[in-house]
Amino acid sequence: MLYRSSPRSLDNSLAFALAAAVLFVIANIYPLLGIEIQDNPNATHLFGAVRYLWNHEMHLISSLVFVTAIVIPGLEIAMIVYLLLPLRFRVVPAGLPLILRVLQNIKPWGMVEVFMLGILVSLVKLKGTSTIIPGVALWSFGGLTLMLAAVASSFNPRDVWIRIEQGSVCERSI
Image 1: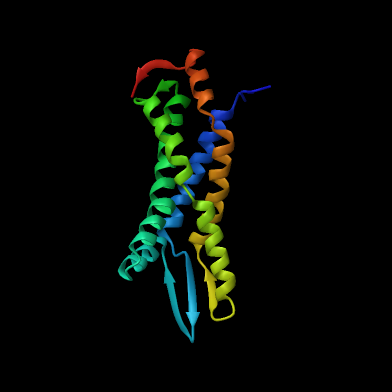
Image 2 (image 1 turned 90 degrees about the vertical axis):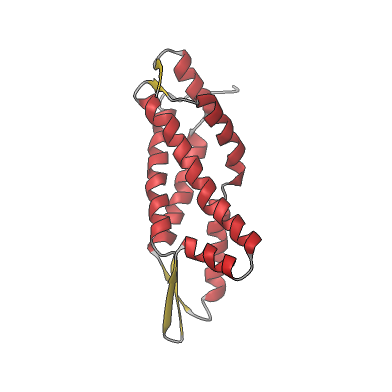
């Protein structure tokens, strides 16, 4: 068997994408982690880490972290929600083929899993020299990693086209 369509795959993908959107917002608003060295606490957000790298002349690394951990995952989540939410209400979203193509092309650039692995390695290395306080955003990034993996495993563009072909959506665009 080459392909099996799940009857609720698009609904599952939408649910995972909405959960990922909530976790993505939390991960970018709250502190990622706190470090206490010699009774001097310091906490940082993800964007604060990007800005720190930029200010310390690490422009390439700063740009890569910004694009792969903030821009691409946010764009991917937004596009999936943009596609699947109207389909849920039987409306074909405008620009559907273009959005599906862009999703296919940016998927390899979203590296939340690699970012999480880097954070965990850093936490293990820093454990002996300072007190590490995991922030809400760190836990949100962990959940976001799981939700993005769930979206990747449940979302298939072929299911979008099948739903449209079966006539279970209206032909109007939003």
